Length: 355
View 1 (cartoon, rainbow, N blue to C red):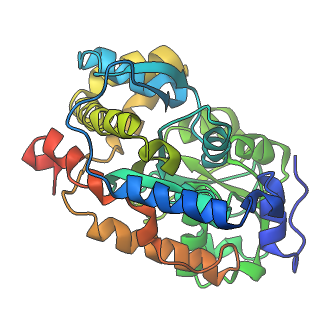
View 2: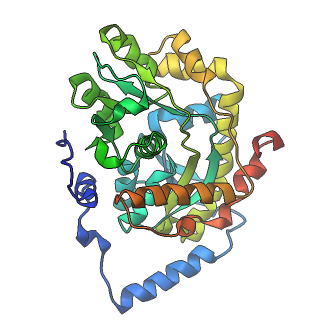
View 3: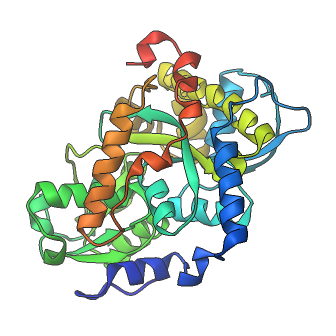
């Protein structure tokens, strides 16, 4: 595991190192690059094709096979393109690396990975938005901890992932509690390392998803671990794709065709919690039915707004929060949104899921 962050270390340096990105990743410069960039920009502004050309395929992220299971249970049928691979990838840093490697065309993440990708110099765009109103994360303590409130985070070791939703949830919670970043030790980890770090005592606190907490407490609550809930919300659940994919007329049409499947799958899951509990949480995640019901009781009602204004404002606030801490450079997040796709998700769902 990475070593804990040392107070005063350049956050950009250690977090860039964590994600395996070097300064050289900025790429080549010169006239050829400028010409190529202009062509790509023109392609990104071209109207979407009405139909997906025959033979078009997409490589789609489906963490823990959620999308395939949703589509199967909801009987959504086959999309008008070939899914050449379903990648079991969920964490923002892993998605960015897969985008770079050309092994992934579209992914489902929170709002922070597109900001991180921009900071790394990687060009990708947001194509669909699902707004969440209730917290998806809570804070878990290591076993034997005396921490009971966010105010107790001062001076403690906190698991932090700059490139993931858990990172911004932590930063927002610290800001709300009046705790400066330098008043705690932010330990650079990725979310798949959080549980091990808690169990070993490497960190005092880690943000866990609502779906992770029941299993953690079942194992460690008797040993003094607990969870701390807050009202901090990570507003955005989104689809995004590399600009190289979206500048391809065939693939951009396929992405547009995929968005309704994504939206309808989320709506079906929300409307059929009993089936989802049995098929996903009990059937694939080894949770008890009682634990599954606790999770779905906290589920957000999907919301696919026809306008992205609220999402853009939230994304800007998030980017500014990261910039204030020295984690990224300040920029206008409007460049992250491809408005050609703005109303597709909303048109795919009933009116009650648009507002």
